[in-house]
Image (cartoon, rainbow over all chains, first blue to last red; front, side, top):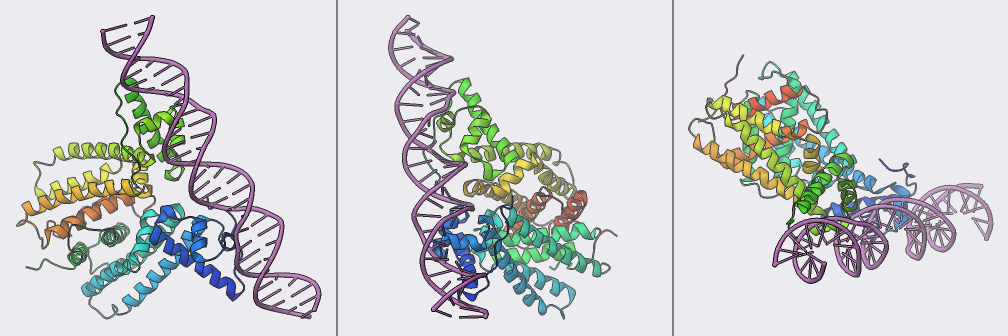
Length: 205
Length: 205
DNA sequence: CCCTTTTGTGAGCGATGACTCGTAATGTAG
DNA sequence: CTACATTACGAGTCATCGCTCACAAAAGGG
């Protein structure tokens, strides 16, 4: 289902520029025209290269979207890591809140592109996204286990899954459109949700 | 983008059977072949009717999927209502837990179809699903406001959104595939998540 | 029985799309 | 300059798809 064999790698700088232009063009088509309007011909035209050049480096249409998703995923991850630097010294509850907010914020890097990748793209790309979520889940799992006695946890596996699932869903809901509530309030409530779940924040007032 | 005018309604029983066969065939193609393989010709063939007959009752391809989604949505809603009958007499925390479990269970009616509708289908169908979620959100909002003084709520709008978003995400996560955790445990944790968030269930042991 | 309405048919039109391949241009090494 | 590898090109192939339309068969009604 993944289509064909991998294609050759660019050797010269010229070729690397071409590949880059193609990936960027794919992203632009994705956000400007939508997933349904994505065609290899259109991408080639938008990139200013010929359709033949495109197929020298990408075996099929899906691999284009995959490349974009990969790049976007890495950008997000880098951003997240940067945002988490400052968390190290904080007390647990504040650290957690910062992490949650960072996780949500990071979904708003190029939100249109994120929306398309997350909601419109197909099998392979979705699998890639899902794999990213599983990675996050493992990280959360580790963090939970490490603080097992400070927290209120019955089943760390299930807890990690629920937490990641929840925060990701909220983050994505914020980039779909009107949400019937104020965004900042939603983020605040999400923090409360997770903190109370983990037994970290007793009710105030 | 929604295509064309609505088509005529079936007057005779014969025609109603045809329409039904078409909707059912659409659902079968959707779960057996996937959204990407859905074509009007294929649906017609699978339904055992001619392509012309299909276009007598459905203006375009999307309306097929929409009909399936509509039907599935109604089935789910009916199921949910039935499951909620028994909740009336229970104390608040148990009622809430039952409701959450019901909401999740109901996503497992024809899970394959649900998966396709929720994850693979496009604009119109997605809008329909989203509208359903908003309805749920309004219901939750009302329920929260009604019990405002028993619960721990700062912003009912945001709370309703977060809760619905969360439970729906968990429900959908359970029908995508391996989850890295036991399903029942996930459901239990989700209940805890929401109950603790609303200040209903203090920590046990 | 005939006339009208409703229902059913499927060949085929026009469009689009993914992808190939023969060829030409450009870089690169000796 | 020459020979070879790399890169770029884009017309064209083949398949599919959404959808129409001219027509035929069945139902209903008088």
